[in-house]
Length: 466
Image 1 (cartoon, rainbow, N blue to C red):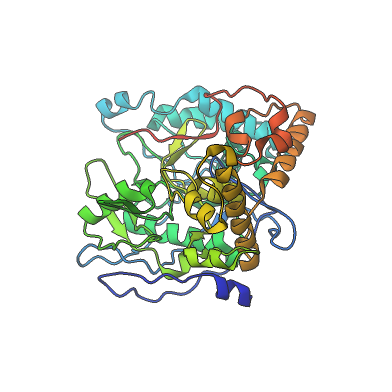
Image 2 (image 1 turned 45 degrees about the horizontal axis):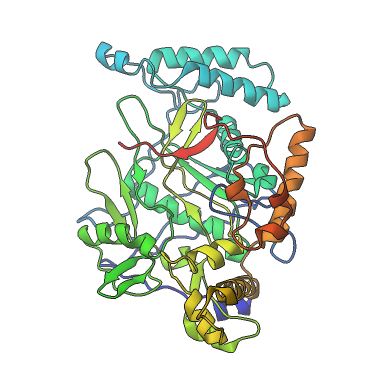
């Protein structure tokens, strides 16, 4: 445990208001292991393997973030759930009273997509019974309101299927382990921010990272749901200067928008961006500083080179994607942040190495004493390997879950074999499945995969504009 505190840097909150202390949520049972979707890759097994899988997680409203709007607290009371439920589907959508609104919503939720999903759910969940009654109820609700409500079980399974269908994810072996937080009753910026902070606490789990998705209110006819403007719940800011960028260039645009809204960010290399939430089209986004206990960061060192610590590099532990839409059975959830845990190459070979990100290869090569006068010396390759060694070493020493690309490649082929035995294809984007370091040394490199079907649902898809 002491290693974690020795090697993780606590952040300080820059806030115009003092946060009110709140009780800490009870621990949530952890999943068997997992990698969520396009950008987060897991590891499994001791010493950092996850715990037994939980069911859908009931959310609690906790948080210490600060919403920067006069005379408004962060978290108001959660809206009570409508007691009028259909077949356990949750609060039922209100029927239309305006004929024009009903006409506009006629094709808002595709009845065929809804029926197909319900049948798939019942087919893959034998205990759910015959789907006929549920299909008829869903179609009736779509006719009446333009959309329908998933049951908690449908939501949880649909989110896991979206992971299973993620063609760019190498960690789908663990798709059943995803923790699903059902937050569909929440739609305000305050509530969304509060539960995003709780998402990070649940996912971080003291370093034993859990794969988690938090699903907020869906789009409805005439009522688009709120959006999180951040690409990830945690990301570093970028600040343009006369000599390039300080920090992460990938965070420069959001940092500029946050400053326009009143954020007083400085110009540090690893400064966590605030969370920006926009409740409706045209509304001014609200911004929130991330509380200290939501962002676990690992300071990077090298097992063989003491000078590496002098570079001052670090990275956050939970890669929570927050700018994609979860689509299940024709229902779109545009606010559904999800995470797994990192594969080392994402940090060491991309975030810290790419020329348009932190661009650290030349610095590392110089400290290693490599000849950088010619590409033929392979100085970039050698520096890249050592950078990745440092990432894996540092996360392991700090007790934070991370995967290496060789182990995860073997596990992906195990997933492919399991799906084949069940009579299911495994669509995969080869360019994403093959890791960016030593690709030819991994077993995923030397084969083809089932073609990607862009229409496959459930799925995490690019979010549509307002």
